[in-house]
Image: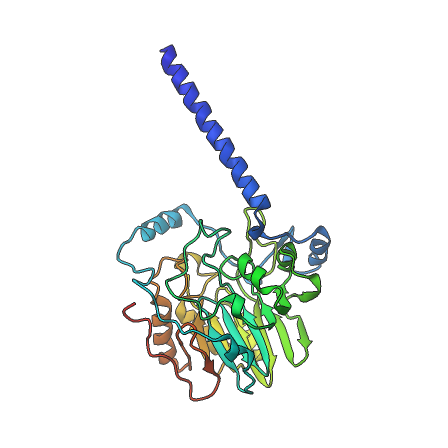
Length: 379
Protein backbone atom coordinates (compact mmCIF):
# COMPACT_ATOMS: atom_id res chain seq x y z
CA UNK A 1 0.00 0.00 0.00
CA UNK A 2 2.83 2.41 0.90
CA UNK A 3 4.40 1.69 -2.48
CA UNK A 4 1.14 2.55 -4.25
CA UNK A 5 0.85 5.86 -2.37
CA UNK A 6 4.47 6.65 -3.18
CA UNK A 7 3.88 5.97 -6.89
CA UNK A 8 0.72 8.13 -6.88
CA UNK A 9 2.58 10.89 -5.06
CA UNK A 10 5.36 10.82 -7.64
CA UNK A 11 2.82 10.89 -10.49
CA UNK A 12 1.04 13.89 -8.92
CA UNK A 13 4.31 15.78 -8.47
CA UNK A 14 5.32 14.91 -12.02
CA UNK A 15 2.01 16.23 -13.43
CA UNK A 16 2.24 19.36 -11.29
CA UNK A 17 5.76 19.90 -12.57
CA UNK A 18 4.65 19.50 -16.17
CA UNK A 19 1.75 21.91 -15.51
CA UNK A 20 4.08 24.47 -13.93
CA UNK A 21 6.55 24.16 -16.82
CA UNK A 22 3.78 24.64 -19.39
CA UNK A 23 2.50 27.67 -17.48
CA UNK A 24 5.97 29.22 -17.49
CA UNK A 25 6.52 28.45 -21.19
CA UNK A 26 3.11 29.88 -22.18
CA UNK A 27 3.68 32.96 -20.03
CA UNK A 28 7.10 33.57 -21.58
CA UNK A 29 5.70 33.02 -25.08
CA UNK A 30 2.78 35.41 -24.60
CA UNK A 31 4.88 38.09 -22.93
CA UNK A 32 7.97 37.99 -25.10
CA UNK A 33 7.14 36.55 -28.51
CA UNK A 34 6.97 39.65 -30.76
CA UNK A 35 3.94 38.74 -32.88
CA UNK A 36 1.62 39.47 -29.93
CA UNK A 37 2.46 43.13 -30.43
CA UNK A 38 2.01 45.87 -27.85
CA UNK A 39 -0.69 47.33 -25.64
CA UNK A 40 -2.11 50.86 -25.56
CA UNK A 41 -0.32 53.00 -23.02
CA UNK A 42 -1.96 54.23 -19.82
CA UNK A 43 -1.91 57.71 -21.35
CA UNK A 44 -3.76 56.51 -24.43
CA UNK A 45 -6.31 54.62 -22.35
CA UNK A 46 -6.99 57.79 -20.38
CA UNK A 47 -7.83 59.53 -23.66
CA UNK A 48 -10.06 56.63 -24.72
CA UNK A 49 -12.12 57.04 -21.54
CA UNK A 50 -13.70 60.12 -23.11
CA UNK A 51 -15.26 57.87 -25.78
CA UNK A 52 -18.79 56.60 -25.15
CA UNK A 53 -17.98 53.06 -26.36
CA UNK A 54 -14.87 52.62 -24.18
CA UNK A 55 -15.16 51.62 -20.55
CA UNK A 56 -12.84 49.99 -18.00
CA UNK A 57 -10.12 49.32 -20.52
CA UNK A 58 -12.35 47.91 -23.27
CA UNK A 59 -14.06 49.09 -26.43
CA UNK A 60 -17.67 48.09 -27.05
CA UNK A 61 -19.96 47.78 -30.04
CA UNK A 62 -22.69 50.37 -30.49
CA UNK A 63 -25.28 47.60 -30.82
CA UNK A 64 -25.62 44.87 -28.21
CA UNK A 65 -23.38 42.04 -29.42
CA UNK A 66 -23.24 38.48 -28.16
CA UNK A 67 -19.80 36.88 -28.34
CA UNK A 68 -19.88 34.23 -25.60
CA UNK A 69 -20.55 30.51 -25.90
CA UNK A 70 -23.03 28.56 -23.81
CA UNK A 71 -22.36 24.94 -22.87
CA UNK A 72 -24.99 23.93 -25.42
CA UNK A 73 -23.19 25.87 -28.16
CA UNK A 74 -19.85 24.34 -27.26
CA UNK A 75 -21.33 20.85 -27.57
CA UNK A 76 -22.83 21.83 -30.92
CA UNK A 77 -19.50 23.26 -32.03
CA UNK A 78 -17.72 20.00 -31.23
CA UNK A 79 -20.38 18.04 -33.10
CA UNK A 80 -20.10 20.28 -36.18
CA UNK A 81 -16.31 20.14 -36.09
CA UNK A 82 -16.35 16.35 -36.14
CA UNK A 83 -18.55 16.13 -39.24
CA UNK A 84 -16.71 14.60 -42.17
CA UNK A 85 -19.21 15.53 -44.89
CA UNK A 86 -18.15 19.18 -45.15
CA UNK A 87 -15.24 20.14 -47.41
CA UNK A 88 -13.66 22.95 -45.38
CA UNK A 89 -10.63 23.33 -47.66
CA UNK A 90 -9.93 22.80 -51.36
CA UNK A 91 -8.93 19.29 -52.40
CA UNK A 92 -5.83 20.62 -54.12
CA UNK A 93 -4.39 23.89 -55.31
CA UNK A 94 -6.74 26.69 -56.34
CA UNK A 95 -6.13 28.97 -59.33
CA UNK A 96 -4.29 32.21 -58.71
CA UNK A 97 -2.80 34.79 -61.06
CA UNK A 98 0.72 36.16 -60.71
CA UNK A 99 1.55 39.87 -60.83
CA UNK A 100 4.81 41.37 -62.00
CA UNK A 101 6.18 44.12 -59.77
CA UNK A 102 6.79 46.36 -62.78
CA UNK A 103 3.09 46.31 -63.72
CA UNK A 104 2.36 47.72 -60.26
CA UNK A 105 5.19 50.22 -60.22
CA UNK A 106 4.24 51.61 -63.65
CA UNK A 107 0.45 51.62 -63.37
CA UNK A 108 -0.74 55.19 -63.92
CA UNK A 109 -4.15 54.68 -65.56
CA UNK A 110 -6.86 56.98 -64.20
CA UNK A 111 -9.22 54.01 -63.77
CA UNK A 112 -8.87 52.11 -60.48
CA UNK A 113 -7.26 48.67 -60.61
CA UNK A 114 -7.99 46.20 -57.81
CA UNK A 115 -6.24 42.95 -56.91
CA UNK A 116 -7.39 40.41 -54.32
CA UNK A 117 -4.77 38.35 -52.46
CA UNK A 118 -7.32 36.06 -50.81
CA UNK A 119 -9.15 36.45 -47.50
CA UNK A 120 -9.38 40.24 -46.88
CA UNK A 121 -6.11 41.41 -48.43
CA UNK A 122 -6.28 43.85 -51.36
CA UNK A 123 -4.11 46.11 -53.45
CA UNK A 124 -5.92 49.22 -54.65
CA UNK A 125 -4.22 51.23 -57.41
CA UNK A 126 -5.79 54.53 -58.38
CA UNK A 127 -4.54 57.97 -59.41
CA UNK A 128 -0.92 56.85 -59.12
CA UNK A 129 -1.49 55.70 -55.52
CA UNK A 130 -0.89 52.19 -54.24
CA UNK A 131 -2.90 51.24 -51.16
CA UNK A 132 -2.88 47.90 -49.34
CA UNK A 133 -5.89 46.83 -47.27
CA UNK A 134 -5.40 44.29 -44.46
CA UNK A 135 -2.32 42.79 -46.15
CA UNK A 136 -2.15 39.52 -44.24
CA UNK A 137 0.29 37.75 -46.54
CA UNK A 138 1.68 35.28 -44.04
CA UNK A 139 1.35 31.50 -43.98
CA UNK A 140 -0.97 31.18 -40.99
CA UNK A 141 -3.34 33.48 -39.02
CA UNK A 142 -1.78 32.75 -35.62
CA UNK A 143 0.95 34.05 -33.28
CA UNK A 144 3.18 31.37 -34.82
CA UNK A 145 2.57 29.27 -37.93
CA UNK A 146 2.84 26.10 -35.82
CA UNK A 147 -0.44 26.93 -34.03
CA UNK A 148 -2.71 28.04 -36.87
CA UNK A 149 -4.41 26.70 -39.96
CA UNK A 150 -2.33 26.98 -43.10
CA UNK A 151 -3.13 29.10 -46.12
CA UNK A 152 -4.87 27.17 -48.89
CA UNK A 153 -2.63 25.78 -51.58
CA UNK A 154 -1.97 28.68 -53.95
CA UNK A 155 0.94 30.95 -54.76
CA UNK A 156 0.49 34.55 -53.59
CA UNK A 157 0.09 36.88 -56.58
CA UNK A 158 3.35 38.60 -55.63
CA UNK A 159 5.82 38.22 -52.78
CA UNK A 160 5.90 41.15 -50.36
CA UNK A 161 9.60 41.59 -51.04
CA UNK A 162 8.84 42.29 -54.70
CA UNK A 163 6.17 44.94 -54.07
CA UNK A 164 7.20 48.46 -55.06
CA UNK A 165 6.88 51.45 -52.74
CA UNK A 166 3.43 51.51 -51.11
CA UNK A 167 1.69 54.80 -50.36
CA UNK A 168 -0.59 53.48 -47.62
CA UNK A 169 -1.40 50.36 -45.63
CA UNK A 170 -4.82 50.27 -43.95
CA UNK A 171 -5.64 47.84 -41.13
CA UNK A 172 -9.20 47.18 -39.94
CA UNK A 173 -8.32 45.54 -36.59
CA UNK A 174 -5.66 43.51 -34.85
CA UNK A 175 -6.77 39.88 -35.33
CA UNK A 176 -4.11 37.60 -36.80
CA UNK A 177 -5.94 37.00 -40.07
CA UNK A 178 -5.81 40.76 -40.76
CA UNK A 179 -2.76 42.12 -38.96
CA UNK A 180 0.25 39.88 -39.56
CA UNK A 181 3.57 40.46 -37.80
CA UNK A 182 5.79 39.05 -40.53
CA UNK A 183 3.94 41.01 -43.23
CA UNK A 184 4.37 44.27 -41.32
CA UNK A 185 8.10 43.66 -40.90
CA UNK A 186 8.45 43.30 -44.67
CA UNK A 187 6.23 46.30 -45.44
CA UNK A 188 7.35 48.87 -42.89
CA UNK A 189 10.34 50.21 -44.84
CA UNK A 190 8.53 50.42 -48.17
CA UNK A 191 5.30 51.99 -46.86
CA UNK A 192 4.82 55.73 -46.53
CA UNK A 193 1.84 55.73 -44.10
CA UNK A 194 -0.07 53.22 -41.99
CA UNK A 195 -3.73 53.89 -41.08
CA UNK A 196 -5.13 52.06 -38.04
CA UNK A 197 -8.02 52.28 -35.54
CA UNK A 198 -7.34 53.41 -31.97
CA UNK A 199 -4.84 51.27 -30.11
CA UNK A 200 -3.59 49.27 -33.07
CA UNK A 201 -0.69 51.70 -33.33
CA UNK A 202 0.74 50.04 -30.20
CA UNK A 203 1.33 46.85 -32.19
CA UNK A 204 3.06 48.65 -35.05
CA UNK A 205 5.27 50.62 -32.69
CA UNK A 206 6.22 47.39 -30.90
CA UNK A 207 7.36 46.11 -34.32
CA UNK A 208 9.54 49.20 -34.86
CA UNK A 209 7.32 50.98 -37.34
CA UNK A 210 8.21 54.65 -37.08
CA UNK A 211 5.60 56.56 -35.08
CA UNK A 212 5.72 59.31 -37.71
CA UNK A 213 4.36 56.84 -40.27
CA UNK A 214 1.28 55.86 -38.25
CA UNK A 215 -2.08 57.66 -38.39
CA UNK A 216 -4.50 56.52 -35.67
CA UNK A 217 -8.20 57.24 -36.10
CA UNK A 218 -11.42 56.84 -34.14
CA UNK A 219 -14.76 56.01 -35.74
CA UNK A 220 -15.87 58.82 -38.09
CA UNK A 221 -12.46 60.50 -37.99
CA UNK A 222 -10.98 61.36 -41.37
CA UNK A 223 -7.66 62.48 -42.73
CA UNK A 224 -6.59 63.62 -46.18
CA UNK A 225 -3.08 63.08 -47.50
CA UNK A 226 -2.48 64.63 -50.89
CA UNK A 227 -5.39 63.51 -53.10
CA UNK A 228 -6.62 60.64 -50.90
CA UNK A 229 -9.12 60.87 -48.05
CA UNK A 230 -9.25 58.08 -45.45
CA UNK A 231 -12.30 57.73 -43.20
CA UNK A 232 -12.45 55.35 -40.24
CA UNK A 233 -16.01 54.03 -39.91
CA UNK A 234 -17.84 51.83 -37.37
CA UNK A 235 -17.95 48.04 -37.46
CA UNK A 236 -19.51 45.39 -35.22
CA UNK A 237 -16.75 43.07 -34.12
CA UNK A 238 -14.07 42.71 -31.41
CA UNK A 239 -10.28 42.71 -31.06
CA UNK A 240 -7.35 41.20 -29.22
CA UNK A 241 -4.14 39.28 -29.89
CA UNK A 242 -3.28 37.98 -26.43
CA UNK A 243 -5.00 36.17 -23.59
CA UNK A 244 -5.80 39.23 -21.49
CA UNK A 245 -6.10 42.14 -23.96
CA UNK A 246 -9.42 41.44 -25.67
CA UNK A 247 -11.22 44.62 -26.85
CA UNK A 248 -8.28 46.82 -25.79
CA UNK A 249 -8.00 48.15 -29.35
CA UNK A 250 -10.69 49.41 -31.72
CA UNK A 251 -12.02 47.60 -34.81
CA UNK A 252 -13.28 49.49 -37.84
CA UNK A 253 -14.36 49.58 -41.45
CA UNK A 254 -12.72 52.07 -43.83
CA UNK A 255 -13.69 54.43 -46.62
CA UNK A 256 -11.14 55.56 -49.18
CA UNK A 257 -12.00 58.50 -51.43
CA UNK A 258 -9.67 59.28 -54.32
CA UNK A 259 -10.01 60.64 -57.83
CA UNK A 260 -13.78 60.94 -57.61
CA UNK A 261 -14.16 57.30 -56.53
CA UNK A 262 -15.44 56.00 -53.18
CA UNK A 263 -14.32 52.62 -51.88
CA UNK A 264 -15.69 50.84 -48.81
CA UNK A 265 -13.76 48.15 -46.95
CA UNK A 266 -15.80 46.35 -44.31
CA UNK A 267 -13.04 44.70 -42.29
CA UNK A 268 -14.77 42.11 -40.11
CA UNK A 269 -18.11 42.31 -38.38
CA UNK A 270 -21.71 41.32 -37.97
CA UNK A 271 -24.66 42.91 -39.69
CA UNK A 272 -26.10 46.02 -38.07
CA UNK A 273 -27.68 49.41 -38.55
CA UNK A 274 -24.28 50.99 -39.08
CA UNK A 275 -24.22 49.91 -42.72
CA UNK A 276 -27.26 51.98 -43.63
CA UNK A 277 -25.93 54.88 -41.55
CA UNK A 278 -22.58 54.71 -43.33
CA UNK A 279 -24.31 54.54 -46.70
CA UNK A 280 -26.43 57.60 -45.91
CA UNK A 281 -23.51 59.59 -44.50
CA UNK A 282 -20.70 58.68 -46.89
CA UNK A 283 -22.23 56.87 -49.88
CA UNK A 284 -23.01 55.98 -52.51
CA UNK A 285 -19.93 53.85 -53.13
CA UNK A 286 -18.34 52.75 -56.36
CA UNK A 287 -16.98 49.53 -54.91
CA UNK A 288 -17.48 47.72 -51.60
CA UNK A 289 -15.30 44.88 -50.28
CA UNK A 290 -17.64 43.03 -47.95
CA UNK A 291 -16.91 40.43 -45.27
CA UNK A 292 -18.45 37.07 -46.21
CA UNK A 293 -16.88 34.04 -44.61
CA UNK A 294 -15.87 32.35 -41.34
CA UNK A 295 -19.45 32.68 -40.07
CA UNK A 296 -21.69 30.52 -37.94
CA UNK A 297 -25.05 31.05 -36.25
CA UNK A 298 -23.24 30.70 -32.90
CA UNK A 299 -21.26 33.90 -33.60
CA UNK A 300 -23.63 35.62 -36.01
CA UNK A 301 -23.31 38.98 -34.22
CA UNK A 302 -19.64 39.33 -35.19
CA UNK A 303 -19.55 37.71 -38.66
CA UNK A 304 -22.25 38.17 -41.29
CA UNK A 305 -24.03 35.37 -43.04
CA UNK A 306 -23.74 35.70 -46.86
CA UNK A 307 -27.34 36.87 -47.19
CA UNK A 308 -26.60 39.60 -44.62
CA UNK A 309 -23.52 40.59 -46.60
CA UNK A 310 -25.75 41.18 -49.62
CA UNK A 311 -28.17 43.24 -47.52
CA UNK A 312 -25.32 45.25 -46.03
CA UNK A 313 -24.07 46.00 -49.56
CA UNK A 314 -27.54 47.24 -50.50
CA UNK A 315 -27.68 49.33 -47.32
CA UNK A 316 -24.39 50.97 -48.29
CA UNK A 317 -25.76 51.82 -51.73
CA UNK A 318 -22.75 50.48 -53.61
CA UNK A 319 -22.56 50.15 -57.38
CA UNK A 320 -20.50 46.97 -57.12
CA UNK A 321 -19.83 44.54 -54.26
CA UNK A 322 -17.28 41.80 -53.72
CA UNK A 323 -17.47 39.08 -51.05
CA UNK A 324 -14.21 38.76 -49.10
CA UNK A 325 -12.86 37.00 -45.97
CA UNK A 326 -12.91 33.62 -47.72
CA UNK A 327 -10.71 31.69 -50.14
CA UNK A 328 -7.53 31.54 -48.05
CA UNK A 329 -8.02 29.97 -44.61
CA UNK A 330 -10.35 27.61 -42.76
CA UNK A 331 -11.49 29.57 -39.70
CA UNK A 332 -15.07 28.28 -39.39
CA UNK A 333 -17.10 25.11 -39.90
CA UNK A 334 -18.78 25.78 -43.24
CA UNK A 335 -17.60 24.45 -46.59
CA UNK A 336 -14.90 26.65 -48.09
CA UNK A 337 -17.08 27.57 -51.10
CA UNK A 338 -20.24 28.15 -49.06
CA UNK A 339 -19.65 31.94 -48.72
CA UNK A 340 -19.39 32.65 -52.45
CA UNK A 341 -22.18 30.25 -53.45
CA UNK A 342 -24.67 31.69 -50.97
CA UNK A 343 -23.61 35.27 -51.69
CA UNK A 344 -23.96 34.75 -55.43
CA UNK A 345 -27.44 33.25 -55.10
CA UNK A 346 -28.66 36.06 -52.86
CA UNK A 347 -27.01 38.83 -54.91
CA UNK A 348 -28.58 37.57 -58.15
CA UNK A 349 -31.98 37.36 -56.45
CA UNK A 350 -31.71 40.96 -55.23
CA UNK A 351 -30.08 42.41 -58.36
CA UNK A 352 -26.89 43.40 -56.56
CA UNK A 353 -24.00 43.83 -59.02
CA UNK A 354 -21.01 41.86 -57.77
CA UNK A 355 -17.65 40.53 -58.84
CA UNK A 356 -15.81 37.36 -57.79
CA UNK A 357 -12.38 37.30 -59.44
CA UNK A 358 -9.68 34.72 -58.96
CA UNK A 359 -6.96 35.47 -56.43
CA UNK A 360 -4.46 37.74 -58.13
CA UNK A 361 -6.79 38.50 -61.04
CA UNK A 362 -6.49 42.28 -61.26
CA UNK A 363 -9.57 44.01 -62.61
CA UNK A 364 -10.31 47.53 -63.73
CA UNK A 365 -13.26 49.27 -62.10
CA UNK A 366 -15.13 49.88 -65.33
CA UNK A 367 -18.56 48.79 -66.48
CA UNK A 368 -19.63 46.27 -67.58
CA UNK A 369 -18.30 44.24 -64.68
CA UNK A 370 -17.11 40.71 -65.38
CA UNK A 371 -15.63 37.99 -63.22
CA UNK A 372 -14.08 34.57 -63.72
CA UNK A 373 -17.10 32.34 -63.87
CA UNK A 374 -17.26 30.10 -60.79
CA UNK A 375 -13.51 29.39 -60.72
CA UNK A 376 -13.95 27.69 -57.35
CA UNK A 377 -16.15 24.86 -58.62
CA UNK A 378 -14.65 21.40 -58.39
CA UNK A 379 -11.70 22.58 -56.30
